[in-house]
Length: 343
Image (cartoon, rainbow, N blue to C red; front, side):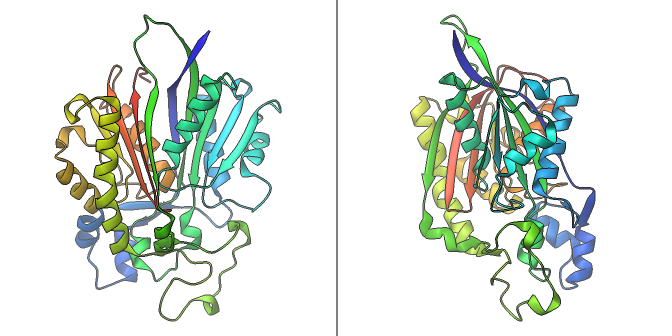
Protein backbone atom coordinates (compact mmCIF):
# COMPACT_ATOMS: atom_id res chain seq x y z
CA UNK A 1 0.00 0.00 0.00
CA UNK A 2 1.37 3.40 -1.01
CA UNK A 3 0.44 6.24 1.31
CA UNK A 4 0.46 9.88 0.31
CA UNK A 5 0.48 12.65 2.93
CA UNK A 6 -2.55 14.93 2.71
CA UNK A 7 -4.00 17.71 4.86
CA UNK A 8 -7.48 16.63 5.96
CA UNK A 9 -8.47 19.13 8.68
CA UNK A 10 -7.38 22.42 10.25
CA UNK A 11 -8.56 24.27 13.36
CA UNK A 12 -7.08 27.16 15.32
CA UNK A 13 -7.45 28.84 18.68
CA UNK A 14 -6.79 32.41 19.87
CA UNK A 15 -6.61 33.75 23.44
CA UNK A 16 -9.66 35.72 24.58
CA UNK A 17 -7.77 38.90 25.53
CA UNK A 18 -7.46 41.38 22.66
CA UNK A 19 -5.03 44.19 21.93
CA UNK A 20 -6.69 46.62 19.54
CA UNK A 21 -5.29 49.56 17.61
CA UNK A 22 -7.26 51.79 19.95
CA UNK A 23 -5.40 50.26 22.89
CA UNK A 24 -2.06 50.85 21.18
CA UNK A 25 -2.93 54.47 20.41
CA UNK A 26 -3.62 55.01 24.10
CA UNK A 27 -0.05 53.86 24.82
CA UNK A 28 1.50 55.68 21.86
CA UNK A 29 -0.49 58.91 21.34
CA UNK A 30 1.61 60.04 18.36
CA UNK A 31 0.26 57.06 16.37
CA UNK A 32 -3.25 56.99 14.95
CA UNK A 33 -5.40 53.91 14.50
CA UNK A 34 -5.50 54.57 10.75
CA UNK A 35 -1.71 54.75 10.59
CA UNK A 36 -1.30 51.43 12.41
CA UNK A 37 -3.86 49.66 10.24
CA UNK A 38 -2.47 51.10 7.01
CA UNK A 39 1.09 50.10 7.91
CA UNK A 40 0.34 46.63 9.27
CA UNK A 41 -3.07 45.59 7.95
CA UNK A 42 -3.93 44.59 11.52
CA UNK A 43 -6.78 45.83 13.70
CA UNK A 44 -6.69 43.33 16.54
CA UNK A 45 -4.21 40.91 18.11
CA UNK A 46 -4.95 38.25 20.72
CA UNK A 47 -2.76 38.12 23.82
CA UNK A 48 -2.29 35.13 26.10
CA UNK A 49 -3.03 35.48 29.81
CA UNK A 50 -0.36 35.25 32.53
CA UNK A 51 -1.01 31.53 33.04
CA UNK A 52 -1.81 30.70 29.42
CA UNK A 53 0.98 29.16 27.37
CA UNK A 54 1.66 27.86 23.87
CA UNK A 55 0.84 24.30 24.94
CA UNK A 56 -2.57 25.42 26.23
CA UNK A 57 -3.38 27.20 22.98
CA UNK A 58 -2.21 24.25 20.87
CA UNK A 59 -4.10 21.71 22.97
CA UNK A 60 -7.31 23.73 22.66
CA UNK A 61 -6.86 23.94 18.88
CA UNK A 62 -6.40 20.15 18.84
CA UNK A 63 -9.53 19.65 20.94
CA UNK A 64 -11.46 21.71 18.37
CA UNK A 65 -10.11 19.46 15.66
CA UNK A 66 -11.22 16.34 17.56
CA UNK A 67 -14.64 17.89 18.24
CA UNK A 68 -15.07 18.51 14.49
CA UNK A 69 -15.10 14.75 13.94
CA UNK A 70 -11.95 14.75 11.82
CA UNK A 71 -10.36 12.16 14.09
CA UNK A 72 -10.11 11.02 17.70
CA UNK A 73 -7.18 11.35 20.11
CA UNK A 74 -6.62 7.59 19.95
CA UNK A 75 -6.13 7.82 16.17
CA UNK A 76 -3.03 10.01 16.44
CA UNK A 77 0.29 8.19 16.10
CA UNK A 78 2.64 11.20 15.99
CA UNK A 79 2.62 14.76 17.38
CA UNK A 80 4.76 17.49 15.83
CA UNK A 81 4.79 20.76 17.77
CA UNK A 82 6.41 23.91 16.39
CA UNK A 83 7.04 26.69 18.91
CA UNK A 84 9.63 29.31 19.81
CA UNK A 85 8.02 29.99 23.18
CA UNK A 86 8.14 26.63 24.97
CA UNK A 87 7.18 26.58 28.63
CA UNK A 88 10.39 24.84 29.63
CA UNK A 89 13.74 24.00 28.08
CA UNK A 90 12.77 20.46 29.05
CA UNK A 91 10.59 18.40 29.10
CA UNK A 92 9.56 18.48 25.48
CA UNK A 93 6.26 20.35 25.22
CA UNK A 94 4.84 17.84 22.73
CA UNK A 95 5.12 15.19 25.45
CA UNK A 96 3.08 17.35 27.82
CA UNK A 97 0.47 17.86 25.10
CA UNK A 98 0.28 14.10 24.49
CA UNK A 99 -0.67 13.59 28.13
CA UNK A 100 -3.03 16.55 28.19
CA UNK A 101 -4.97 15.34 25.14
CA UNK A 102 -5.05 11.65 26.07
CA UNK A 103 -3.20 10.59 22.93
CA UNK A 104 -1.89 6.99 23.19
CA UNK A 105 1.54 6.40 24.69
CA UNK A 106 2.43 4.55 21.49
CA UNK A 107 2.53 7.89 19.64
CA UNK A 108 5.75 9.68 18.83
CA UNK A 109 6.09 13.32 19.91
CA UNK A 110 8.65 16.04 19.30
CA UNK A 111 9.10 19.79 19.37
CA UNK A 112 10.90 21.77 16.72
CA UNK A 113 11.99 25.36 17.17
CA UNK A 114 11.25 27.36 14.04
CA UNK A 115 9.31 30.55 13.41
CA UNK A 116 7.59 31.83 10.31
CA UNK A 117 8.59 28.84 8.14
CA UNK A 118 7.58 26.35 10.84
CA UNK A 119 4.33 25.17 9.28
CA UNK A 120 6.02 24.32 5.98
CA UNK A 121 8.82 22.46 7.78
CA UNK A 122 6.14 20.61 9.76
CA UNK A 123 4.41 19.52 6.57
CA UNK A 124 7.74 18.25 5.25
CA UNK A 125 8.38 16.26 8.43
CA UNK A 126 4.85 14.85 8.34
CA UNK A 127 5.20 13.87 4.70
CA UNK A 128 8.46 12.07 5.46
CA UNK A 129 6.97 10.16 8.39
CA UNK A 130 3.87 9.11 6.45
CA UNK A 131 5.45 8.22 3.12
CA UNK A 132 8.12 6.08 4.79
CA UNK A 133 5.40 4.20 6.72
CA UNK A 134 6.43 5.49 10.15
CA UNK A 135 3.07 7.15 10.91
CA UNK A 136 -0.41 7.45 9.45
CA UNK A 137 -2.25 10.17 11.40
CA UNK A 138 -0.07 13.12 12.38
CA UNK A 139 -1.17 16.01 14.57
CA UNK A 140 0.85 19.01 13.39
CA UNK A 141 0.60 21.76 16.00
CA UNK A 142 1.92 25.31 15.83
CA UNK A 143 1.69 27.61 18.84
CA UNK A 144 3.27 30.87 19.87
CA UNK A 145 3.10 33.39 22.69
CA UNK A 146 5.56 36.04 21.55
CA UNK A 147 3.72 38.59 23.71
CA UNK A 148 5.42 37.13 26.78
CA UNK A 149 8.78 38.49 25.71
CA UNK A 150 7.76 41.74 24.02
CA UNK A 151 8.89 44.95 25.70
CA UNK A 152 5.74 46.98 26.55
CA UNK A 153 7.27 50.12 25.05
CA UNK A 154 8.44 48.50 21.80
CA UNK A 155 5.65 49.52 19.48
CA UNK A 156 7.44 48.16 16.41
CA UNK A 157 6.68 44.60 17.53
CA UNK A 158 3.62 45.18 19.73
CA UNK A 159 1.70 46.36 16.66
CA UNK A 160 2.55 43.20 14.73
CA UNK A 161 2.56 40.06 16.84
CA UNK A 162 -0.41 38.19 18.27
CA UNK A 163 -0.57 34.89 20.15
CA UNK A 164 -2.33 31.86 18.75
CA UNK A 165 -2.13 28.20 17.78
CA UNK A 166 -3.30 25.89 15.04
CA UNK A 167 -3.89 22.15 14.76
CA UNK A 168 -3.53 20.47 11.37
CA UNK A 169 -4.32 16.82 10.70
CA UNK A 170 -2.00 15.27 8.13
CA UNK A 171 -3.05 11.76 7.14
CA UNK A 172 -1.77 9.04 4.87
CA UNK A 173 -4.17 8.29 2.05
CA UNK A 174 -3.85 5.26 -0.19
CA UNK A 175 -2.89 6.12 -3.74
CA UNK A 176 -2.49 4.32 -7.03
CA UNK A 177 -1.19 5.18 -10.48
CA UNK A 178 -4.72 6.16 -11.50
CA UNK A 179 -5.14 8.55 -8.56
CA UNK A 180 -4.34 12.20 -9.35
CA UNK A 181 -1.68 13.93 -7.29
CA UNK A 182 -3.48 15.26 -4.23
CA UNK A 183 -0.55 15.45 -1.90
CA UNK A 184 2.01 17.78 -0.36
CA UNK A 185 5.17 18.95 -2.11
CA UNK A 186 7.62 19.55 -3.62
CA UNK A 187 9.51 21.83 -1.23
CA UNK A 188 12.13 24.56 -1.37
CA UNK A 189 14.18 25.48 1.73
CA UNK A 190 16.67 28.21 2.53
CA UNK A 191 18.69 29.32 5.55
CA UNK A 192 21.00 32.23 6.34
CA UNK A 193 21.97 32.24 10.00
CA UNK A 194 23.99 35.40 9.40
CA UNK A 195 20.72 37.31 9.80
CA UNK A 196 19.83 35.65 13.09
CA UNK A 197 20.71 38.71 15.15
CA UNK A 198 17.99 40.77 13.42
CA UNK A 199 15.09 38.96 15.11
CA UNK A 200 15.86 37.29 18.40
CA UNK A 201 14.94 36.71 22.03
CA UNK A 202 17.64 35.53 24.41
CA UNK A 203 15.35 34.22 27.14
CA UNK A 204 14.62 30.61 28.09
CA UNK A 205 11.32 28.84 28.81
CA UNK A 206 8.47 31.33 29.09
CA UNK A 207 7.15 30.02 32.42
CA UNK A 208 10.39 31.18 34.02
CA UNK A 209 10.31 34.75 32.67
CA UNK A 210 9.75 37.25 35.45
CA UNK A 211 9.52 40.88 34.39
CA UNK A 212 9.49 43.89 36.66
CA UNK A 213 9.74 47.62 36.09
CA UNK A 214 13.41 47.52 37.05
CA UNK A 215 14.04 45.08 34.20
CA UNK A 216 12.94 47.52 31.53
CA UNK A 217 15.88 48.80 29.52
CA UNK A 218 16.09 52.56 29.44
CA UNK A 219 16.50 52.93 25.69
CA UNK A 220 16.91 49.97 23.36
CA UNK A 221 14.43 47.10 23.99
CA UNK A 222 16.87 44.46 22.75
CA UNK A 223 18.38 43.12 25.95
CA UNK A 224 17.98 39.88 27.84
CA UNK A 225 14.43 38.54 27.81
CA UNK A 226 12.91 40.91 25.28
CA UNK A 227 12.17 40.29 21.65
CA UNK A 228 14.29 42.39 19.32
CA UNK A 229 13.52 42.99 15.66
CA UNK A 230 15.48 45.01 13.11
CA UNK A 231 12.52 45.79 10.87
CA UNK A 232 14.35 47.36 7.91
CA UNK A 233 16.80 44.47 7.65
CA UNK A 234 13.99 41.90 7.86
CA UNK A 235 12.13 43.79 5.12
CA UNK A 236 15.18 43.85 2.83
CA UNK A 237 15.84 40.17 3.42
CA UNK A 238 12.22 39.31 2.60
CA UNK A 239 12.15 41.21 -0.70
CA UNK A 240 15.40 39.51 -1.70
CA UNK A 241 14.71 35.85 -0.93
CA UNK A 242 10.95 35.35 -1.26
CA UNK A 243 10.58 36.03 -5.01
CA UNK A 244 13.58 33.78 -5.66
CA UNK A 245 12.03 31.06 -3.46
CA UNK A 246 8.74 31.27 -5.38
CA UNK A 247 10.42 31.04 -8.77
CA UNK A 248 12.62 28.13 -7.67
CA UNK A 249 9.53 26.17 -6.60
CA UNK A 250 7.75 26.92 -9.86
CA UNK A 251 10.81 25.78 -11.81
CA UNK A 252 11.14 22.62 -9.73
CA UNK A 253 7.44 21.86 -10.33
CA UNK A 254 7.52 22.84 -14.02
CA UNK A 255 4.69 25.30 -13.41
CA UNK A 256 4.04 29.02 -13.91
CA UNK A 257 2.30 31.59 -11.71
CA UNK A 258 -0.88 31.02 -13.74
CA UNK A 259 -0.94 27.36 -12.68
CA UNK A 260 -1.33 28.30 -9.00
CA UNK A 261 -4.90 28.81 -7.78
CA UNK A 262 -4.07 30.39 -4.42
CA UNK A 263 -0.97 31.88 -2.82
CA UNK A 264 -0.78 31.71 0.99
CA UNK A 265 2.24 33.56 2.33
CA UNK A 266 3.31 33.92 5.94
CA UNK A 267 1.15 36.77 7.22
CA UNK A 268 3.95 39.06 8.37
CA UNK A 269 2.20 42.39 7.79
CA UNK A 270 0.24 43.96 4.95
CA UNK A 271 3.07 46.30 3.95
CA UNK A 272 5.48 43.42 3.28
CA UNK A 273 2.84 41.23 1.64
CA UNK A 274 1.73 43.91 -0.81
CA UNK A 275 5.33 44.60 -1.82
CA UNK A 276 5.84 40.89 -2.46
CA UNK A 277 2.62 40.55 -4.42
CA UNK A 278 3.54 43.52 -6.60
CA UNK A 279 7.09 42.30 -7.16
CA UNK A 280 5.88 38.84 -8.17
CA UNK A 281 2.95 40.22 -10.19
CA UNK A 282 0.42 37.94 -8.48
CA UNK A 283 -3.23 38.70 -9.10
CA UNK A 284 -5.03 40.05 -6.02
CA UNK A 285 -7.79 37.46 -6.39
CA UNK A 286 -5.23 34.69 -5.88
CA UNK A 287 -3.37 36.29 -2.98
CA UNK A 288 -4.66 35.65 0.53
CA UNK A 289 -4.59 38.24 3.32
CA UNK A 290 -5.81 36.95 6.70
CA UNK A 291 -4.21 38.94 9.51
CA UNK A 292 -6.64 41.76 10.19
CA UNK A 293 -8.13 40.21 13.33
CA UNK A 294 -5.24 38.01 14.49
CA UNK A 295 -1.97 39.77 13.68
CA UNK A 296 1.29 37.97 12.97
CA UNK A 297 0.99 34.64 14.81
CA UNK A 298 4.38 33.41 13.53
CA UNK A 299 4.23 29.67 12.67
CA UNK A 300 0.42 29.67 12.87
CA UNK A 301 -0.24 32.35 10.23
CA UNK A 302 -0.40 29.96 7.28
CA UNK A 303 -2.72 27.34 8.84
CA UNK A 304 -4.96 30.11 10.21
CA UNK A 305 -5.10 31.66 6.74
CA UNK A 306 -5.91 28.26 5.21
CA UNK A 307 -8.75 27.73 7.68
CA UNK A 308 -10.12 31.19 6.90
CA UNK A 309 -9.91 30.42 3.18
CA UNK A 310 -11.85 27.20 3.74
CA UNK A 311 -14.51 29.01 5.76
CA UNK A 312 -14.93 31.71 3.09
CA UNK A 313 -14.86 29.13 0.26
CA UNK A 314 -11.74 30.64 -1.29
CA UNK A 315 -10.14 27.22 -0.99
CA UNK A 316 -11.85 24.34 -2.76
CA UNK A 317 -11.10 20.75 -3.79
CA UNK A 318 -8.85 20.39 -6.80
CA UNK A 319 -6.98 23.64 -6.27
CA UNK A 320 -3.20 23.92 -6.32
CA UNK A 321 -1.89 26.13 -3.49
CA UNK A 322 1.53 27.60 -2.93
CA UNK A 323 2.63 28.13 0.68
CA UNK A 324 5.54 30.48 1.40
CA UNK A 325 7.18 31.13 4.77
CA UNK A 326 9.98 33.56 5.64
CA UNK A 327 11.45 35.26 8.67
CA UNK A 328 13.34 34.58 11.88
CA UNK A 329 16.51 32.57 11.38
CA UNK A 330 16.87 33.80 8.66
CA UNK A 331 14.75 30.99 7.27
CA UNK A 332 12.57 30.67 4.19
CA UNK A 333 10.61 27.84 2.58
CA UNK A 334 7.88 27.14 0.07
CA UNK A 335 5.84 24.17 -1.03
CA UNK A 336 2.82 23.15 -3.06
CA UNK A 337 -0.33 21.54 -1.75
CA UNK A 338 -2.83 19.94 -4.09
CA UNK A 339 -6.00 20.46 -2.07
CA UNK A 340 -8.67 17.79 -2.13
CA UNK A 341 -10.51 18.12 1.16
CA UNK A 342 -13.48 20.42 1.74
CA UNK A 343 -14.47 20.75 5.39
